[in-house]
Length: 570
Image (cartoon, rainbow, N blue to C red):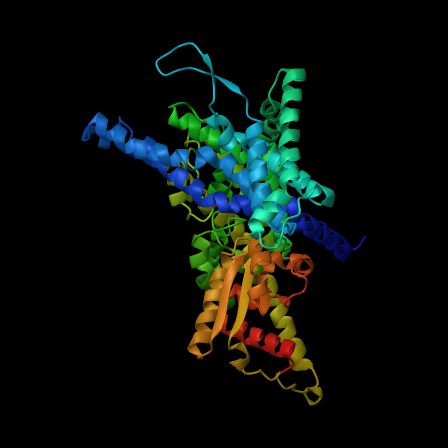
C-alpha cells in the first residue's frame, strides 16, 4: 500500500469521525462552556489563594469581611462549574437536534434536561453542617451530579434522549394537528407532546428498573462502568501519552484532532479537573496529576507541538530570512498558543525533520512534568486555565499561584529549543542544498529555450463590494486574525466587504449569509462534508496556506476576489 493511499485512508476516516453528528455536537457544546469554566477557575484562584484566611490579605481584613468576599466567588462557582452537567445536557441535545434539522431544537433540549433530572436519586445521604452522622433527605439535587462529576451521564442522556425523541417525532400518527392560526411554537409543542411524554416515561422506567434490580442508581453504574475507567485511562501517564502522541501526529498531517481525539480525551480530564478543584477548595491534596490544563500548560506552549520553542530556535540560529520573517509574523499569536500559521507555513506539515520534534518533544515535557509533580517539586493543577492563556501565566494560574510551575515551564521551553535546534539546522541545510542545486540547474539550462509566461491577470476588487466572506477553523481563533487582516485591506481599498470568522460548529448556522466560505488549512480535510452539510449553497474553498501562514491579508483578499469573479463569471 502506497504512502498516498495510507494518507488518503487516514484523511477519509478522520473526515467521517469529525463529521459525525454526535462528536460534532460534543465538540461544539464544550466550546460554549469554556467561558464558564474560565470564570470558575478564576474564582477558585481568588477564593482559595488571594482570600485565604492565612494569606496576606487575611492579616488586614476581618474574618467576616473575608467570608462575605468569598461568598461572591461561591455563588459564581454555583452558576458555572457546579452546573456544568446541566449546561452540557441542554447544549448537546440542542446541537444534535439542530444538526438533524429539527424545527424546534429547544424542545428536545428540554426533554433531555427532564430525562437527566429523572435519573437523579429521589433521596440523598448527607451530613448536616456541624454534624457527624449522615441523614437521608429528599427534594434536593447533589452538586456532585450537576458539576463535572455528572458529565458522562449528561452526555449519554443527551444523546439517547434526543435521538429517541427525534425518532418518535417522525411517527405522524403520534402528532397532534392544529390550525394555521395557532402560533408555530405552540403547534410544535403540541405536535411533540407524545414524543416528550414517551421519552421522559422511558427514562423514568429505566431508572426505576435499574434501582429495583441492582440496588444502584443509574449514575452509579455509569460512573463505575464508563466514567471511572476513562478517567483512569486518560489520567494514567501511558494512556495519556498515547492519545497526545496521536493528536500531534494527526496535526502534522494537517488534520485537526478536535473532532476525533478530543471527545475521548477531554471529558474524563474535565472530570479529573473538577475533582482537583473540589479537593483544593476543601484544603485536601488534589487527587490527579494529569487534568485537562496539564496538556496545555506543559505540552502546548505556543500551541500543539509546543512550537514556541521552535520560534525561539528560529530567532537564535536560523540562517534563512524567510524563516526569520515568518517567526516575527507569527510570534504574537504564538504567545496565545495559536500556531496554525507555523504548522502550515514553516511548515511542520509533511516535513519529517520538523515532524519528529513536533510529535516527540511534548511527550518528553509531559513525562518530566508528571514526575516533577509526583515528587512534589511543583504543585498539582487546581484551577481551570483555557488553552489560549500564554505560557508562564498559565502555569502560575493553574497551580494556584506557585512560581515553581512557572519555572518548570521555562525549563521545558529551554529544553524544547535544544531539541528543535538540530532538526531546524538540518532542515535549513537541506533547503540551502536544494536551492544551490536548483540554481546550478538553471544556469546550465539552455537560455534560448527559456520562455517567460505572463502572470495571470488579476481581476479587480470591485467584485468584493456588498459580498460576505466567512472564514472558519476549529475554534475560529486563527482565522479571526486572518479575517481581520483581509477586512482591513479591503477597507483600505474602499470596498464594502463583510468578512468574519466562526468556529466550524457554527458554519451550518451562518452559511446562508455567505457568498464564499474559506477554510483554514487545519480543517480543509472536512471540505467535502461541509459542502454536503450546507447543501452546496455557496462555494467552500481552502485559504492559500502560504498566505495564511504569513497572515498576508492583501494576497488572500486578492485571491478571494479572483475566486468570486470566477464564480460570478466575470
